[in-house]
Length: 107
Figure 1 (tube, rainbow, N blue to C red):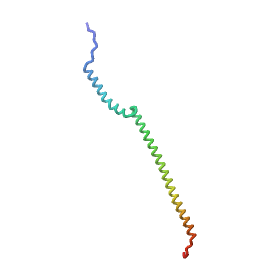
Figure 2: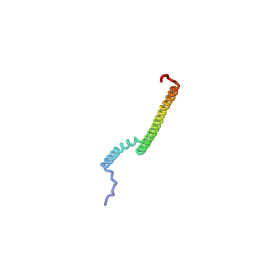
Figure 3: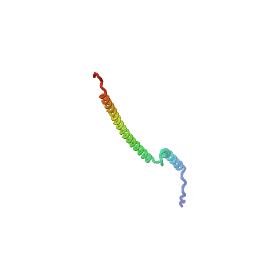
Figure 4: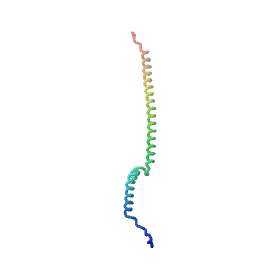
């Protein structure tokens, strides 16, 4: 007669390798967990999208600032030219007005 097979207990070598596999998995998962902990909700893709949006906003603000500066510079230069011309016109007006009113003898 054949004896009935009894369930065998796991071999001790198998338990050691299971522990080793778990240890290796934990060691490889630790850096990934550490890196993901640096991102909101552990999502690096969303973090990248937020940075891209902020970079785009900064570029847009820089373009607007440049346009405002160009506008101010051009209007300032125009105002300076008008002011200088007005000053010269005023000077010539008064010079001509007063020079015609004076008569210098012998000239």
